[in-house]
Image (tube, rainbow, N blue to C red; front, top):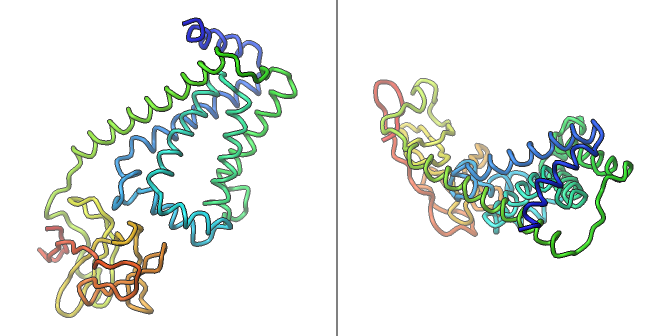
Length: 295
């Protein structure tokens, strides 16, 4: 219990001992990281294959032009685990920084995570300094150097009290993650789509063209096509590993960016190139009142 009571006492004392710049950085970074963890945890699609915000889709998109693309391609197959790790890490770094538990480790972890995110997703932003992850990396490093320079950083040791305090922060990260997932589940149940929702005006979809949309009733990214015989649509979720396929007009195929699977939209979404083995799922649509609508 003494270790538990020491957390708010240590956090309170640390605020008085820090410079104005340290306080500003600590407040901004801790709140930003906690919010980032909550934003992902409370997103019902972040850990769910087939959802537009699924972490696997993001990893697959990053892998196309990242300097660490080979690593990201391997991580795509373990997307859910990667997503859980990201959520827990953001919560843990945010709470540890706010409560001043292992502050140097938290600051260095925040810096390292920002660098990894920069290499993964925003490396190609031009000019490079406009990438938000670059800014966060600089801010975390600045905060760490300020703590070292002002000698406000507590010595790292493995006393039982410090281990217990670190465990409490880890527990807070887990509890916050579970709370976010609970909110995501309840939100998902309330957000079912309505059949008959308009997708696009028929006049806006010329014959031979495609249109990307999110099916509100099924909650999946989908691709709509119009031919001389009518309109039809498929789920844009690859049946191999759950990445989002894209229509390539040159080859007239739906292509997966993760492992190269291809599907023929004019042949009921059949697989033309592996490693996928199952055709794309059909999405029910129809024409009503000059609009293409969901069924």
